[in-house]
Figure 1 (cartoon, rainbow, N blue to C red):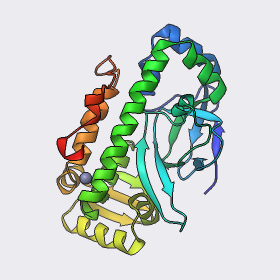
Figure 2 (cartoon, helix red, strand yellow; figure 1 turned 45 degrees about the horizontal axis):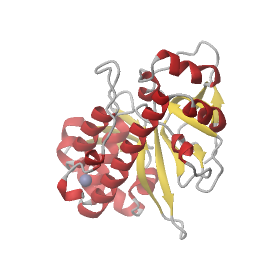
Figure 3 (tube, rainbow, N blue to C red; figure 1 turned 30 degrees about the vertical axis):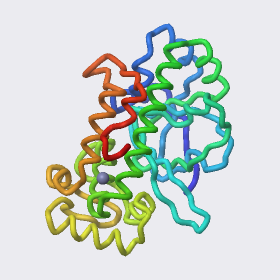
Length: 266
Ligand SMILES: [Zn+2]
């Protein structure tokens, strides 16, 4: 995999409705960022940042999906979170650590606005609205990390595979997704042979209609039946904490109580 972030040509429209965090900012606060935002293309499988690398940019996806991967010393990987246009990559750099703790990989191609960490930090210091957005985003990421940990420990691989397919499909246009079994193996932290078995199980119940040459066609309703409750809980929490401006023009700032989604996960 290679880093392949290319500037978009002038005039290329941003697909997917725009980044929800940027959309939540009042015009005067957004104006602190706008002159420094550069639109880039997120190519599928591109590594945006590697674990241990110095953070250079903050990314606000407008479309597509980026997974946060934890790399273990023996070469195994597992996904700890996924972000799309409701989140940002690198925004937590304002909280201190200058090196990334995760490897971020583009799973669904799309576009993003990028800004240098230093420019973002300057705007963050000068705007309470930007600080509020970073706080809401931090709460959302913490919720996700907590929830993925619970899901990994409590729920079967088949349900987790269905959850990942739904997470990726939410950020894909159309029923056919470009995702290989190798990618699913990395996201789930299981062997390829396990993924093959689980894909076969989901095919048997009609949740996956076909899978060939790295393309998976899903039946969304059946996939939602096959997944665990984690998918619906996280989707509801995402919409509550980082609402889609087109639907609900209001941002919720999480309190400590919000971080306990469900008693079972405390
Ligand atoms: Zn689960």
